[in-house]
Image 1 (cartoon, rainbow, N blue to C red):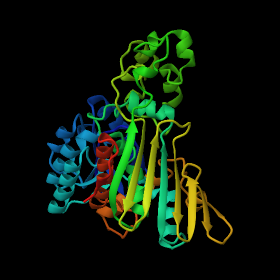
Image 2: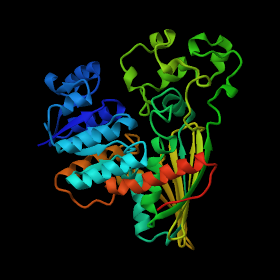
Image 3: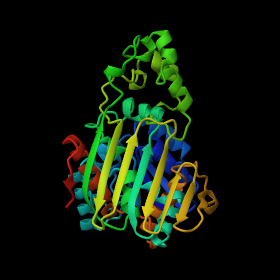
Image 4: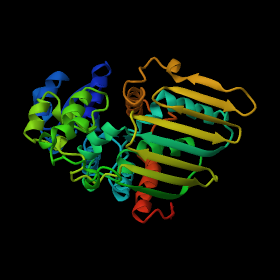
Length: 413
């Protein structure tokens, strides 16, 4: 029986808790969060009361009491918790990004290697059947050599507002650069699919829309005080957007609000969620493009945008022998080997997992791979160890540096 603990019981922590509940070979023995969350969720997930801790430090003070920990806290907390966990002998499943700057990422990697700890990042998109199928096509040579790859991360207007204007990731200094916080999945996918090393990056982006210059007439600092006619027309009216989205799979950092009266919170201005999206303290970038060149000569382009109806990723790869493209949300790939008829590949048929369930089904497969990693350690083409993750993190940090310097091209050592 593998015994694990979860530190941080927001939406990601609860997702892992749900998977553990369904696994007869793994037992959740401890959780660490706020007092209220620990006590309430401990009962739900079968954790004994004395093993529900009100902080990560309270948990660590017990010494090593299980085999591994899932660290699902905010980005800036990862470095301290990861180092303490490894010092006590824990293997770690660490939420992405590993840390908020490159130096901390490298410290986690070097400490893991020095102490012989297994640290795996939650680059969950690798595990989604959609991207798994693309990887198989690439490795089988169906596309020939990759020449160009384009990936678009469509965040959705409402999800960006929930997470990056009114949510925990709204201020980059308190979390991490938006390209890291939101798109390290995408950078990892690009780095995984192209069999070469990224050697140079350039990037542009800004906070285009969610600022005071776009505040409509009649708006106020909080939605509760907004003029009725303005509120009625606003896409970001908190009285509409939160009740609609609270129970979706993408909750935008709203796990802290579960079980509470959302209208009372908004009426009393108790939380940042009720603040006007155009009058907040947010500086998270709402659009960014990243250009990459690899030592093979291949190029890649990533677009991150807040302005879409749905949350979905779109990819197109051009190779010397073929091309493939598709919408990850739909789970359909369109493959053309040059000179042959186009093939339509329904990825939904390759898995018994619901593709709407946790990153296109990837959450489940990532969880299973982590348990395998810390037990039998079978070979895995998708496993994202801390050593593997450093490369895509480095691209992200360099992209943000380029953006801050006006889009200049930066070499990656």
